[in-house]
Amino acid sequence: MAADLVIKGGWVVTPDATFKGGVAISNEVIVAIGSDDALPSGKEEIDVKGKHILPGLFDGHVHFREPGMTHKEDFNTGSTAAVCGGITTVVDMPNTVPPTADAEQVKVKKELGEARSLVDFGITGVVVQTNTKDILPMAAAGVIGYKIFFGETIGNLPFRSCPWASMRKTARSWRTAPTS
Image (cartoon, helix red, strand yellow):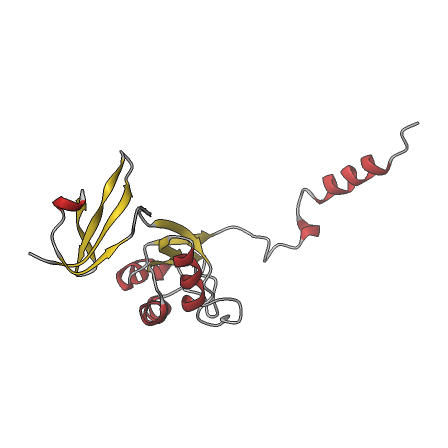
């Protein structure tokens, strides 16, 4: 059986060892890892001439900002940067406009990622006090996790109402108090 692609002639790095050899890929899946002579032939073969063949890395917290804030980043620019850094899988956060807070927005983000991402990706949904009914529908639509904000956060809590505000004032007076 011929693989679609065989990458050989390198140093394969695994969690257990580094050895001379390569990898074979069919249908976008690694089907063999081993010494060059143990690999199947490939429809396409690349000799990497002694370079290292590393597993892809995973970034579990990215902000591709799509939809709504693509002036900051999007699936195309973010995943291009990921690939350049050896990242092959990312998990995108839900703080977009609109936020990924229901099944419809999960579907929108999934379609955007499928059309533009160069890496595998997962989607995180957001859960706040007002959308708990959307947890299971978001899961069915494909989220792999949730950011849950049931308390007050920096974005919705004025500092002056924080019980620590008086401590901040006290700490400031300690820094400016005369030392003599």
